[in-house]
Image (cartoon, rainbow, N blue to C red):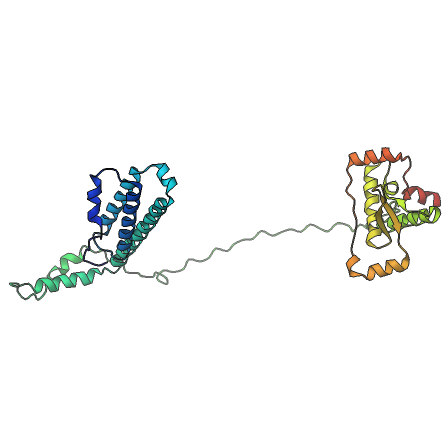
Length: 316
């Protein structure tokens, strides 16, 4: 931070306006422009008077703003811009000033400062040569003020070791193993439910049989709906989706927007399985219980089309 102070370029003009009449908008704008120029000058000239000069600039800006009204600022946006620029420059000046102070303080060395004072005092006229104090005279008194670090001494080996007590462990008595028992023979229960693969293939047969007999596609809801069991309806939808995934059937909408089930020929099935674009495609329809009841009533379904348990019982 420079040691000399330089006066601000136009600070002498501020006192002239303090006692004058209220200035016109053009005069206030010109005064703000002068303050802006002075603030710019402060950014490059930091000294001991910087903070005082900056305070005078801020007071001048406040005085100019108090003279004007809100309507004047709305009409002339340049005044608002100058005001904001002055505030920005003021912030920059404070930042540089704070950095300069912290930088100079961090460079302070107490030992160097003391040596310089000693050299200065010795160089004054009328001072005698100084050989330095005899600190040995104060050694005995001063050393009493300092706490001495106690001497560390290890006691390992100075005393006889105490004999270790023998730890008596409790013996664990193991129980005799009981007689061996053969596991009871588990009677394998007959499989009452069909596997998923068998169920899917049975649904496939139902669809293919229907199209051979009627020569037309099968209504999707007529196929999967169960009149009394909502869970069975959901299972039928899921099992039918497996047939779509394996490219045995496909869905299409009729003119009324009702999904229809179409069978796919074997050569088309093989071609679709080899096609990577159609691989692993599976259609699953979302159906709520309210929609299920409405569909059962609309289709007037009395018996389910997919009744694999009853068909297997009739075959047996």
